[in-house]
Image (tube, rainbow, N blue to C red):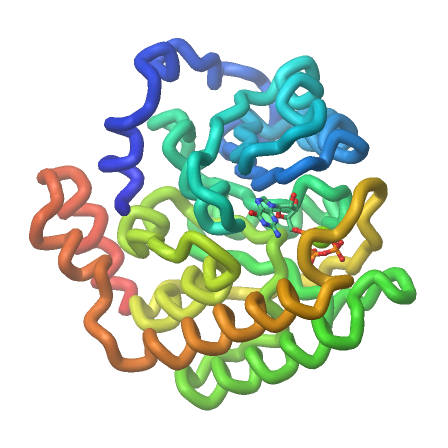
Length: 278
Ligand SMILES: Nc1nc2c(ncn2[C@@H]2O[C@H](COP(=O)(O)OP(=O)(O)OP(=O)(O)O)[C@@H](O)[C@H]2O)c(=O)[nH]1
Ligand SMILES: [Mg+2]
């Protein structure tokens, strides 16, 4: 669903969101998917705000702990995602991105992203030089044991597939990334689960958007329990979702292209502008 469509579902009080802060990234909105992350969500939001992010939106995936209360107290907007899944949480949060934001930075709620590198991840999108910047933990290295071996192997295979099928220069599918809101509109993201990050990348390659990687460190989650990496079934499902997404989009018509034709005039202009970049 396109951002414009998503916004139609958002509560009307979203219009009153204050995006007039003075932070260096006040036109950047952080989107953070969260499922039972009460031990880490507060410091993640505080850090993003301290670094000057204009707005933090949490996609809360039915947390049963104090995630939502802590996030609200830390100054974030919390949007409930009715459907389980990483992509679903991101979609729900995207619906609450204020209309005047020029970019969205994604990071996880578990404190495992290298927010010290925020400027490197966000800067090239804000300057208009790139449409998507991905924090690569392969290029950045990081804490020992932060990535489990299935995660490393999965990344290796996924990146190799993207290099072969899309001729992309890519090393990672890390969650810490920044994308312009214009590019997001054209991508018309759909995946409700762990194909989300792969979908964003392969659509960017197919749309010939300007994509770059910057090194970020891989950190261990700061609290709570893993929903994926330590467990066999979620690891298998995540791996399958990622690889099948990469394979599927190699030749299918892009939903983004349909959105271009069906979209309202401003959204259509966005798509057409992006086409010039191809
Ligand atoms: N797995 C999962 N994660 C979700 C969901 N909704 C939101 N999330 C968030 O997505 C992020 C990634 O999940 P993690 O459990 O950290 O997965 P991981 O990074 O492979 O595992 P760790 O090694 O523990 O960091 C976290 O911020 C979760 O809270 C969901 O439905 N499923
Ligand atoms: Mg994690």
